[in-house]
Image 1: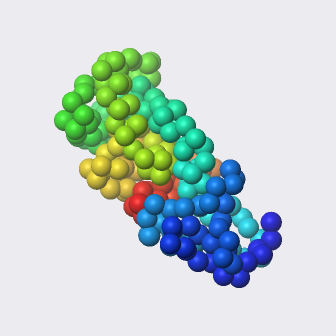
Image 2: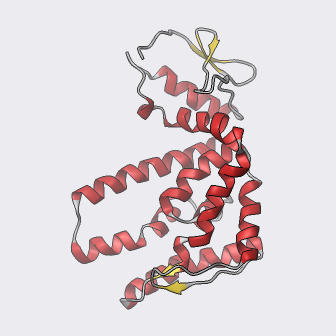
Length: 226
């Protein structure tokens, strides 16, 4: 679609407007943002559009659309899908060796699990290897409650953080302010960093990881703008 507007503004309800008309989501709802900062950031994406619209250059708009349409339509179901990551959280699956990798995982992951235990009054089953280990039912239920409590926009921002790290605990620690974005990404990438150290860098894997890091960063930015 070609650019058809000249003026981008924000109305009193924090709806982004194009030449006075509201931007609408794919579901035809006005794109109303919950904070001034997010509204300004989304409006900036629309101002930066060149001759044609490229959704890839408008990631904040994309997350806002997701919050307004599919998530808002059934937030409980969306939250349940995110909470399900707690059933096989990355932090609960440790390497059997070598010792240095085991130590690195423990140094980064044990404090996060300890924080989650204290924050949510839960316990975790931790195992060596990749075979699935069931988490206590009470833990799954409590983490589900924590995720369901977030509003539609926080669920939208949390989604890329959890899915790209493979860890609900990392996502919760980030959104609760226990760790920052760099620490979260570093914790999630311990295994990949180890592989690069041992066998060298693969350009395709590196490129994919950079794309994931960018998407992760958008989620973090989105949460911060709320």
